[in-house]
Amino acid sequence: MSEKNRDGKRNARERLAAEREKQKAAERRRRTLIVGASVVCVLGLAAVIGVVAANSGKDAGPKKAGPVVAPSGAQGQDALAIPVGKEGARSTLTVWEDFRCPACKGFETTYRPTIHGLTGAGKLKVEYHLATLIDGNMGGSGSRRAANAAACAQDAGKFSAYHDVLYENQPEETKDSYAENSRLIELAGKVDGLDTPAFRTCVQDGTHDSWVEKSNQAFQNGHFGGTPTVLLNGKNIYQDQSMTPAKLKRMVEEADRG
Image (cartoon, rainbow, N blue to C red; front, side):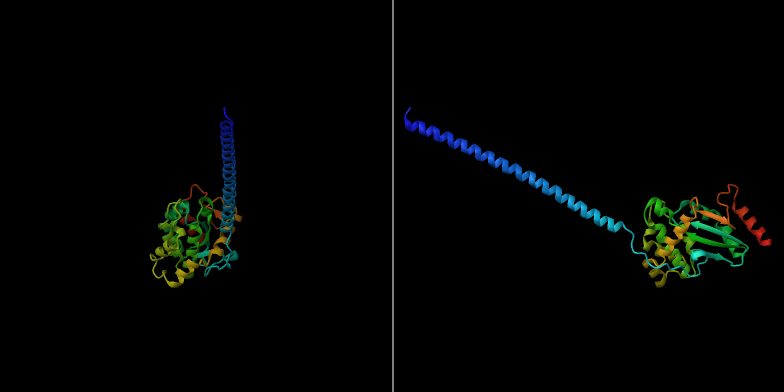
């Protein structure tokens, strides 16, 4: 073999080796870039998650509470009771209720005619206390929004009628329809003279929200078994398995006779 051919083959092997080394170097750079990009993506994702979590924490935190504004005519300790009936009645029915509570609706449906008859006759005074138990158990804000709207109705002297409308139109427990102010205002149209600019503003501004929260805290502090809790002259009659509207009427009338 001539010296020229040997040199040609040697140069070809060297070029091939150099090309292979170049390819290996390119492959190493490619892998480095992929790993680096992956790390950047992971770090970027972690940063995004961190920002979202931080913002979520801020959104989920309690909003600044407004002043406690009791509805007009509220009575009792801390003005947490909305009274219905004659002030001088010899019997007082204390009702702790939640407008999203199905059991509360059941009580209202069964006892409402009797209660209305007794309050109308001046023999019974009812003190309504509003709680937000279902909001805590099921999530949402319908209990609080409805309670605020009911307090707004009390400001307008329409609590009793609006109270009944809310129960007559109560959504399913799992549906938080009362969280919508528009729905609460719509239902106010069923009560003569309630749907006014003042009522709408009160509902939309959550004028009595802090009062509702304070009322619910009083309910929690009372360690009641749930809603409704119904006390006649301090005695829990809702737990009385023998209680009926007729029995309640008899008890109140006996007390009225002295």
